[in-house]
Amino acid sequence: MIVDQLILDRKNTKSKYASDKTSERPIRSVAKAISWRVIGTLDTLLISYLFTGKVALAASIASIDFVTKMFLYFFHERLWNKINWGK
Image (cartoon, rainbow, N blue to C red; front, side, top):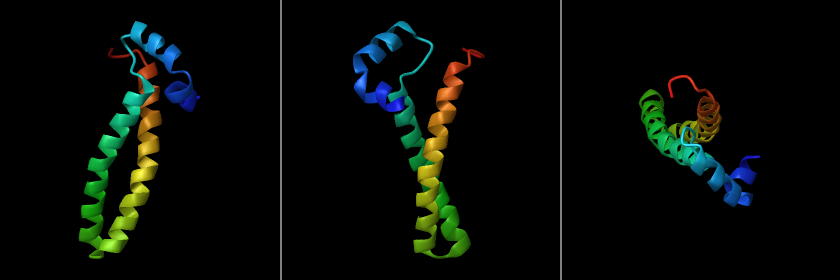
């Protein structure tokens, strides 16, 4: 479904999103998820290092955090995009 929207059905999704100004295209949610996770991961890396004093352990924690929270953010963003409250 997501792959279909992002890659395979680009013509249909462009027209769908062009006519619907209240929602965002999924690729925008992906870009926002990545940029936010870079910031969040740097924060996690710093805090993990301060607590553990070990760069390798802090990097391991931050890399797991990066992947899991990026997926969580993407789906959270897509769900909120379906809610009309506050638009």
